[in-house]
Length: 103
Image (tube, rainbow, N blue to C red; front, side):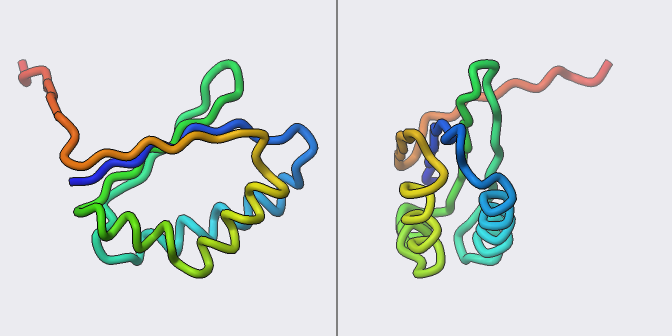
């Protein structure tokens, strides 16, 4: 498994409809890629956004990072949408889980 965490802050003056359209297209595109498992996004009280994506392999995640349409939207993100961002990635993250037993 490969995990990517994308932390970002949006620009106050960004074109929200354009961002939403690009984001919807990227979600559609990534869902069809081999090796994609899931993505979930969260918004903190201070406005920071965190997206966590899971992949079957590092190669699958890199294929997404280098997908031509995704590369174009990444460039638009840097020029038009994001104030800042940080990407964290790791292979074989240590995973621990708990589920409450059914009563």
